[in-house]
Length: 171
Image (cartoon, rainbow, N blue to C red):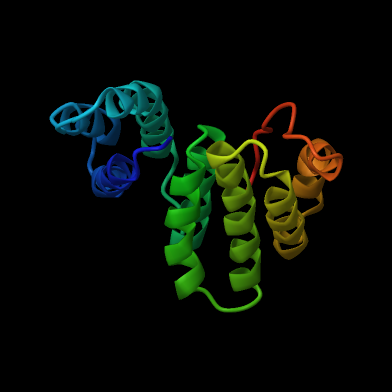
């Protein structure tokens, strides 16, 4: 079970630290000061902390780019570090700001992240994940991404969770 309150606090801290010069170090230090009230929260933190730090290190190393491209880079980093909820949340701000055709493309990326988050919450929830993933791939309108996700779509179509979660390229 995911401790939702901690998940939300970590996401907010990620966004806050993203603007800092040494964002990975800032996140590591600030997250260690969070009060954890249960063994479940401590386990979740042990799992997530290295993912966030690694994603932030990648974001810090990324060359400056236009806001849209930067948002896609950050969403991609979050996804590829298994932070599917965070990728979904982060890209929602981009989706709200954009106009078509970019808006639909970003919505596709959000649905892809949501599909994998759904599986994270319930590995047996393949039907809902298949719906989100297939819709997301269609909206993203990216042949390379569709090819990357084809094995996951096939597994979900056959009623089983994906054998592996591929690294994606949104930007």
